[in-house]
Length: 547
Image (cartoon, rainbow, N blue to C red):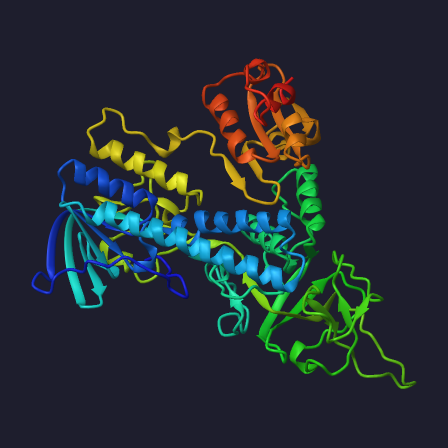
């Protein structure tokens, strides 16, 4: 059920169900080739069980992470960082060359990993991989639509592992306008966009903003509300925003995209309403055709109170940021232009490409879950209990499709939850046993966190102290010439218990795992304060952070 990658690249040869065997009876059916499902398939096969794995697309063997998620994006992020360090993002020619090389390397890595993942399962005698879209026809029966025709599968146990798909907001033109992409499509472009508008300022959108800014793209991020990263502490959010702005990323807050359409120059044109603007008229974007000579305002520095005195021409350099044009009202009786003063002002933005980064939703479309008695939550995820059992007997849901944290390592941990029930454990491992899930966002300076931040600790009424350390004080960060960022930790005052940590720092994605381990073991902050670390490392900064 995974979404296939556009511009499909080399894929392994697939094994479809032979036409002489259109019906299969098996011990286990796994729908989706993601991390949890593929790990479970190998484990079941090793235990002598017959397993069928159904994957909708040959481009998705191995799941989201290795094909359209974690690994290809990190490959591109590393290539972008290299381009910035080498100065390859300084001219149009070097930018294009660096981007082309990065895409080529990304495709090589994903193709290799996809082939490896496919054969890791398909080459086992007990596993049959079927390429086709599956849907339930009954409590233990599924039909898989393959290129050779439908295949019926009956299984004693069924595991739904179909992942998530990008959430597309209901904006006119968003699905039909060329140049509008989800993260999947944007990571497989042949040509680098000179200008990019990102709808959504969550961490996925910010990763792409940082990456494309490093490649040399002029990036503009549209945020629906007024607060940047509202779930993070204000000081951390401000530091992340400052870092992105230093890379050249521009932000426009209180921005609501009303419509998207092709631009006259072959790019993309967005009609955007901005709350709190004091100038500009509320007219439809298409009421003023591109290139009519209206005043154009560069949104550089726009934060919801755009300076309308800063203007650029409609034919500004394509490496400039997305251009915002005021839509004027008709002249007044005395011939002077009249500007409306609405609660929101309407503008047109023109750009080369648009990334829709408004979150991901569980991928259940077309599964016909009702035929099996599998219910959904109010948010559209497969409803599961603490053992990941659905509302139907002997059917489980693993990974993003069950509404849990959308991380590959959570899908892997979901496998542990399920396997603990199948292997005869006296006490199965449950979702409630899962502790302190860390996360990392791979910006130019990576941001990682685990546990509670100060905002959450205060809301919970906890008695805590805040520990802070500038990354510039860490010797290894200076050696690496990466002194930007801050480290912050929340410690319970009387017990010394570590409540959480937020690390905006080079190599934070590695160091955060040390903090998580200490929290899992209920080690007090003094453990990290007094731990002997090698030198020079970023990890040894924990000595000072928890001092």
